[in-house]
Structures are given as C-alpha cells and as structure tokens.
Figure (cartoon, rainbow, N blue to C red):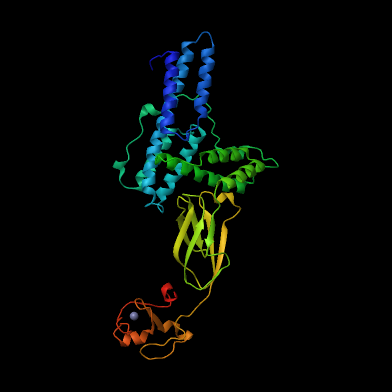
Length: 393
Ligand SMILES: [Zn+2]
C-alpha cells in the first residue's frame, strides 16, 4: 500500500461517501461505520504531530470501508439475480437457502457489522445458492477475489449483535416485549427491509425509509411502551386495509361475488377464503383493490384479509363473513323436451346451457345427440351444479 498524505486521505474519504450516496441512496449500509471513521480522522488531525503510523492505520481502515461498499455492490447484483428467479422457484429448497443468506447479509449491511465468517464468504454462499436455484451458472459471475478480504477491523465496531442476539443478551425488564411479540415484529421488520432492498435494486424510491428506521429503534429498545408509541404513529401513517363491498355479515344470493376495498397504495393484500384458498391482491396507486368473480360456498363464508407488509400494525387480521343463500334458479321452469317441471332433488340430473342459459335434463340433452334443444341454440356446452355459473342469475 503506497503511503498518502492525511489531506489525500480526507479527499478519498469524501469520494467514498459520494460513492455510497450514489449506490446506496437509502442508507441501507449503516452510516455509523463511516461516521466512526470521520471521528477518528478528526481526532488524528487535531494532534499537532501526525504520525505516519496513524495515517497508515486510517488509510487501512478507509480501504476496508471501500471494500465493504464493494461487497455491498456485489450483494446488490446477486439480489437482482435473486429477484429474477424468485417467481419461478418459490418451492425450491435452494430458494429458501438463498433467501436465508439474503436475510443474513441484509442484516449485516444494515447493522454495519462484519459477519463472523466474513462478508465475502457470505457472498459466496449466496452466489452458490443462486446457482443451485437455476442451472445456469454462467449468468452469475464469480465474485471472489483474494484481495477483497477485509484485513483490518481491530478498531472497528465489530459487534456481532444483530437485533435478535441483542434481544437474547439483554436482561429482560418489566416493560419488555415478550419473546413471541418480538419474534412477530422482527419478522415484519425483516420483510420491510427486504422491500427496501428490492426498491434499491430496482432503482425505485422507497417511501417507508423513516418508518423502517423508527421500527428498528423500537425493536432495539425492547421496550413495550416504546413499541406502542411506534405502532401508534405507524398506524396513522399507513392506510388501514378494509373491504368495502360486500359489507360484513351481508346475505348474498350470487355465487360469484366482486370484492372491493381500500388500503395502503402500492402494497399487497393477502386474502384467505374459507381458511383454504389464498389470494394475493395489489393495492393500486390510488389505494384501491378489487377481486372479480370470487366463488362463494353456500352458507357461511369467511374472508380473512391482511396487508402483507403492514399487517403487524393490527393485533390480528381482519375477518369478513358473508352468507350465501341457495337459490335454485331452475324452479318453476320446465325441461324443453319432457315438459316436466324441475324439482330440487333432481339437482344432479339438471344441466344449464352455456350459451342460452336455459336449464335442461342431462338425459334430454343425450336424446338430442348432446345438443341444447332450445330453438336456434344447439350448443354443445353445459354447466352442471358443480359449476359456479350454474347458479348465477
Ligand atoms: Zn342453449
């Protein structure tokens, strides 16, 4: 390493900060480690005599910071690869592995720490997981260079304590969050940080930066009262998710229902229909969401709904219940061939023409070579009682 003057050192540090601002405008990489360097620098220049040893020490630290940022850039590149694969590989074990490494690395950079086994090794683990995720290794460049190992951290804050370990280390006091509450909130916090990263990788502005930072502080405090204050403020900031139609406890007589509601703009809502079917909806940019033609069961239906990112603001997800009455639309009508009136107990023998929407006995259709016998229809497509459209007015 060639020696440089203390003046040059400052110029290089300023350039590094500018670079950080460019690649990391949302300050995902903890600013504290840069501020620590600046403090050390100022302390050094205050002395009348600046030893070359001290300058070399600072120079080394500056180099380490530069490498750290370089690692962050590598991480961003890998994260971008991950996002491209995410959609197709959600069930893959390698997907879970990759997302696990991403969580660890994200924690590393946001906390400004140097993971125990080294950042570059972490990057390699993530890179390997991504290679497994899609058998096209040529797309992922090899990232490790020997010189990239960060050599000197002696004087840095090398704290290993991320938020989780901080929690276990800290003595619990009367007002602290319970372990279950903490785990739930920490998970929500990790999800928000992932959102933050995605925005950075996709070069989009992230709206909830301040909220995530305040969330981090509240979590670190471990203090239930402080967490309540944070949650109270966040609740005012984030539009609560609500379904406006149908109304809760509504009694409906249409098998297919349209759902509409309001929520935080550009966020995602998860609906769970009758504890079974999961549906994800996007809230549009003006804060509205819609779902068309949801099929209901006869009797009671429950729709549990929650905002995926901000559901933690509520104690539990919201529930909508609606009742669907069974209306037999074929009652009072006659089969066109036999001229017999339909009866409820004949449900499984009745079909409905997809084109003219008339009801017929299935054996009447058979008699007519599988065609609808309504004049000028002659369709060959029918619904039976298992199809939602059989029941639709
Ligand atoms: Zn027909």
